[in-house]
Image 1 (tube, rainbow, N blue to C red):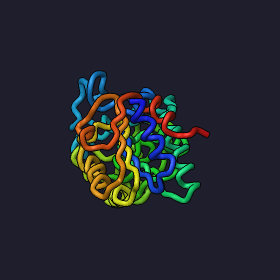
Image 2: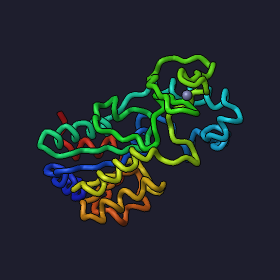
Image 3: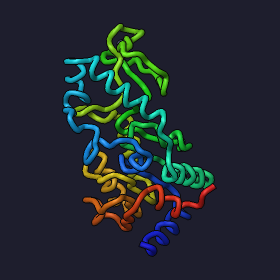
Length: 247
Ligand SMILES: [Zn+2]
């Protein structure tokens, strides 16, 4: 572990282009409930009921209310030292002329709250809503919205959370940008994700395939542990600050 930390620190210290994939693990350390596993928010609920276009069509008020409640719970949650370390790393890489791309599976906005600039939200964001029919979209942040489902100002249809629900495709432009970053990076890190959910899991293979150094930070070993150059087990909030010179 000590050796892995030292190696990772040295790789990151002079990395030109860095790409990162983050998942639920880093947010869980801030207290954001995870979708699956013990204490997961799906307990007692059906994912198909609450987070699918079909569920929304069947019972829009229930789906809207549930997402609204989740969004308001997030208002009290703060980013952690892992999020902050990634924002610091981005600033350092960019300052020396490199590129930094943070693709995240999280919908909570915590990376941006910590100061990350170039964030690709693969699964969208719960802090925005979009029309269920046309392309109208707006940021709502933590603005309280009553239980009445907002209507689109353009076409009058229901607005829905701007997140990727079960059975839906990742937004194509966001995915293409993430794939490009994975192909072009010198160092690729996965953080807090078991990397088993495709297509996001494919990013690590793309990066490794072009010879990038790969680093994994996760509580437990994952399906990707055997593929990466360095696998670090522990909390992102404890490991990442050790890999980056903090500002
Ligand atoms: Zn509309």
